[in-house]
Image 1 (cartoon, rainbow, N blue to C red):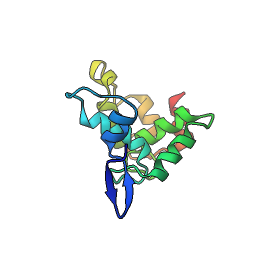
Image 2: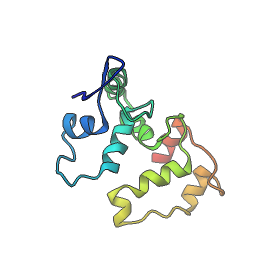
Image 3: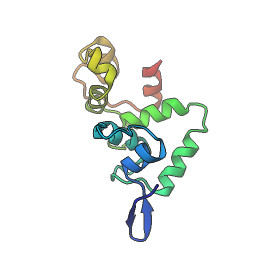
Length: 133
C-alpha cells in the first residue's frame, strides 16, 4: 500500500491508507479533506506521509483499552502537539457530516467549560476523555 519512497523508505499517502488499505471513500467523488483528516490520526508527524513506524504505533494503539478515545484525540489533535485547541476542535467538527446536518453550537457553555470563555485554553488527553463522556 505504500506508494511513496523517500530516502529509501516507503510511505503511505493519506489516500493509500484510507482508500486502499481501509477501503473507505473508494468512489471517484470522495472528499479529500475527509481522507486527510482520517489519515492524520495515523500520521503523528503531520508530514502528510505515514511511515511504517507510525502505522505500527497505530496498530498498537488499537489494542489498548481506551483505543477509541485515543484515536478520537489523535483525530482532533491536528497539529500533533499532544493538546487540542478550540480551533482544531472546530475545524474537525465542521468537516463532519453530522455538523453539516445539525450544526454544533461553538459558543455553548459546554465549549466554554473546556476551552475557556475566550476559547484559548488547550485540553490534554485526560481532559479530552472527560470531554467525550
